[in-house]
Amino acid sequence: SEILNSMPKAELHAHLNGSLSLSTIQKLIDLKTAHHCEDVHNLESIISKLCDEKHNKTLDECFQVFKIIHQLTDSEKSIYIATVDVIKEFAKENVRYLELRTTPRAIDGSIDTYVNAVIKGIDDCRKEKIPILVKLLLSIDRSRGVDVAKQIVDLTISLGHARNDVVVGLDVSGNMAMSNITDYFPLLQKVKDAGLKLTVHTAEVRNDAEAEAILRLKPDRIGHGTFISPSLIESPHLLNLLMESNIPVELCLTSNLVCKTVPSYQDHHLKVFLEHGIPFSICTDDKGVFSTSLSQEYLIVSRTFNFTLSTMWSFSWKSLDYTFAAQNEKEDLRKIWKEWEHKNE
Ligand code: 5GP
Image 1: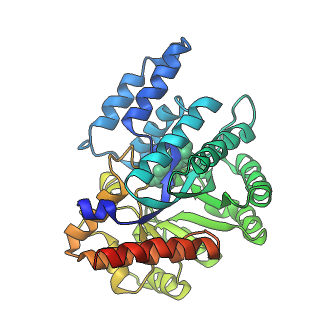
Image 2: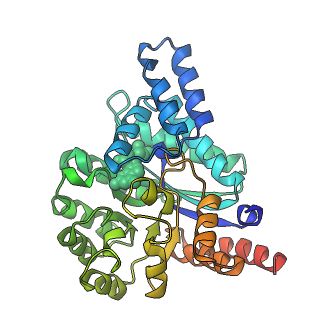
Image 3: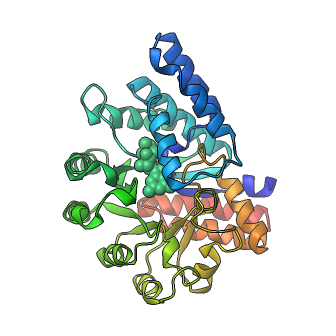
């Protein structure tokens, strides 16, 4: 496990507010207490919910946990602290490329304030020379409606120009049970037309018609892709579509197990996707809420399927192709990966 910790890795699917460690949460509670905020009373329950690794949550329960965490990241300062801590924690386990995603919420009436606090955190880590390249995706929460999403899309496009060194695209996440994805398609097309990248949570729960519509939209990556797997659905139609499109999939094993969308690690679709040549990247989703780390996810994959270290390295290596970094940045990252490979041959 130490060797997987030392291996350079790329994290392509990490939600900021789901990635907060307990120490960051404690810091943010202390910040609230210092400001004599009255609403810290239910924060005890966050700690117990987050500490309880074995408490299997349903997806709906996870969405409830996010609502509680959001009470802690409701100011410029708390969002900044959250961003810096998450970046440093990933860097500590040798994640050398991080694509962070977050759903902007209005701070004092402005979503710009929220995003600027995140970007400041990223910029300051860069200035501090933390050895990790960080990019940002803005997320739209599909349960919050098209009007809110439009504001976020407009901000993504404007920052995708003004801060194209950091903001690379858009993610679609949130509770899929509460919305119709096609309502968002004109907005997603706008992001694509602006030359920005797009990743969409797809088939996280079963909805074949929706999964097909998303695959036909051709996002640059998809998240989860669970109910595309022939081990879970009878028809190979979606799998064929995914294979034809060659869209890389962000796979989050612990998240899927905890939320019970896959019955066991053994049954995870990673194996099926590998056998069908579908490109994928191993990711954490929400390292805080699911008490994991990227090294831990690599360890779970290697133990579950008996993969050798060199196979694990090749998964990490290939995930560089699927990042939304610029070509020259990818080349620089590949040097780091190669250097580690030579040292560990
Ligand atoms: P944030 O965007 O606030 O930084 O991170 C938390 C948010 O990410 C949640 O409120 C939710 O919208 C989204 N999210 C985190 N994990 C998941 C997941 O497993 N599935 C989906 N669909 N959305 C998620």
